[in-house]
Length: 313
Image 1 (tube, rainbow, N blue to C red):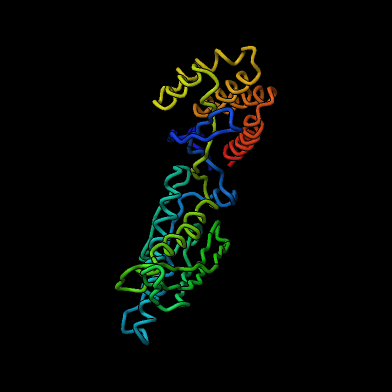
Image 2: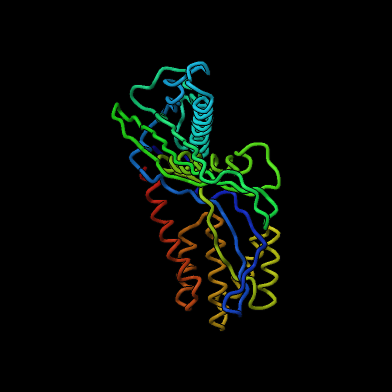
C-alpha cells in the first residue's frame, strides 16, 4: 500500500485550557490529529478489500427457531453488535483513504470473498445479572449490576491465507436511577455495547491500516508581555504572528526565554507538518535545559520513525 499524499497532521484543534508548570510559567495545550501506522503492517498490503458480516450470513434465524425469548433476545443483541462492528471497521478504514474497500457487507448478503477480505466470524455477548435491582435508601435510587463476558472473532484473508483475531474479555454494567422501565436502562447497557464496539471494532481496524489519533502538545503562554500576545494570536488561529514573536526571542540573552521560544517554534512547525524543522527547534530548546523540550524531542523522534514506516508500507 502506498500513501497518496504527504500529510501527517490534520484537523488542528486549539483548546484554551491552561496548566501551571512549576509555579513559574503558564503552559497552553494544543491538540492535533496525527497519522499513526498500522499495528500489524503485513495486513495493510491488502487492496480492494471486502468487509463481510459472516456471523449474520451463516446464523440468520427466525424467532420461531429459538427455544425461548431469552435466547432470541441474545441473538438480537449479538446481531446488532455484529452490524455495528462492520460499520465501525468500515468507517475507520475509509477515514484513512489509503486502503480501498471494494464492498461493505454488514448484513452478510453476498458471496464470501475467497482471496482477500475482512470477515466477522462470531459475536458472543452474554448478560449475567450479578445484582438484581434493589432500592438504595442512601442514594434514593435503584441499583443493579450485570456481568457481560464477550468474545468477538475476526478473520483476515490475504492471498488465500487466513489469520484469526480474537477479542475476549468481561465488562461490567451498573448504574443508579430513581426509576426505570428496563434493566438495560438501569445499568446503561448501551454504554457496554459502545465499549465492545470500540475495543473489538475500532481498535481492530487500527491493527490493519494507518489511522488518525489525537495527540497533545504543550507550549509556553507566559514569560513576558509579548508571549502573552503570542498566546492571544494562537487562541485566534493566527499562528504566523505568534511564530514571529517567538522567533524574536529565540536568540535573546535569557536562557529560559530562549528555551521557551524555541520549544514554541518546534510546536508551530509540527502543526505545519514540518517534522524536521520541529525536531531542529526542539533540539535547540533541549540544549537550553528546557524540560518540556527534552520530552517533546523524544516524541518527535518517534513520529519521525512512524512516518518512515508509513512511507514504506
